[in-house]
Image (tube, rainbow, N blue to C red):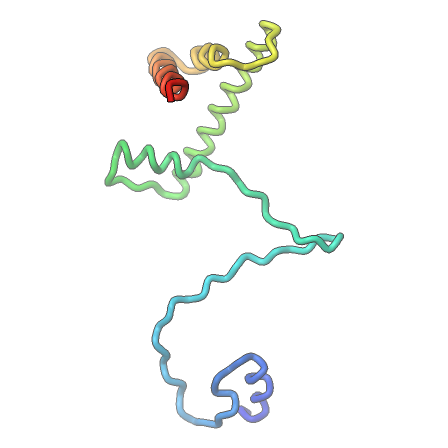
Length: 144
């Protein structure tokens, strides 16, 4: 059986393809597994297609979590929920700011429109904290 498979084994690069033994193979020293690269698909026109990069807030969520609770982790499902939450809030604020700019016949969304839309979307005390943190961030950005 081994002799009939030896051409196939040698073609696959098997080191014991030319040997005929009845002994079980020796255990090799453990080496780290090779990382396989993702296969690139070829389109109809022969060009190589690549997967589109998906932008997420995962690294930023993780950094903030470690600032607030250094010993706490987060599951991938919870991270996905947080990412969806941030995307949702961002869409709501951007949409409201766009409406405000349109109402005032302005072509540009400024920090004023963002601030007003945050006040409209977020309830009470949360809006006050968000506005103060946003103002602080804009001041820090413009000063540096």
